[in-house]
Length: 197
Image 1 (cartoon, rainbow, N blue to C red):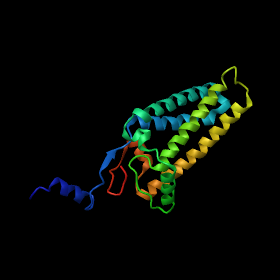
Image 2 (tube, rainbow, N blue to C red):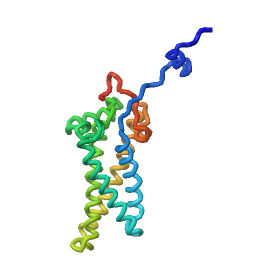
Image 3 (cartoon, rainbow, N blue to C red):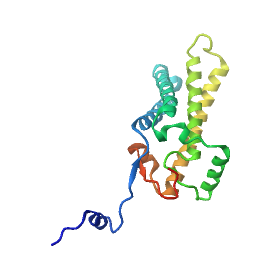
């Protein structure tokens, strides 16, 4: 009995179709940053004034994470760099229009809307951290507008997170891949001929 060639065995075991090839997109530091920020923001949002010490500690760590992400956005791996996912307003608007029609092109890294969301979240969370720090100083402790901006920014971030999750769900459905899993494994389906790598 002849031995089946490895490439034919792969096809036989998967019902005649090869599993799609995957490539590494999100480096370990991007993934660690992402999920750490998720956990710490959730913790800080839920504790608020009720658990002041741990809330402030979480805020300081979040500020450090934001600082790291800015540096990594300049010097990090290919898809972590801001230069790989910052697009102009017309490109973002066109992408959103295509998404509504479920005809958006697939991007291996962040798509134009996802890139805009990264910047929006970084800025908003930086404002939360900055105002949170100001509230611990003698000069700004008890100053109304600082506390108001801190709280408003936290709720704005919550809204952005909701939009981000919605965008991930839509893009996952549209392109047939689990983007949340990709942020855990770091791997996505390799770029096809119509994708933007």
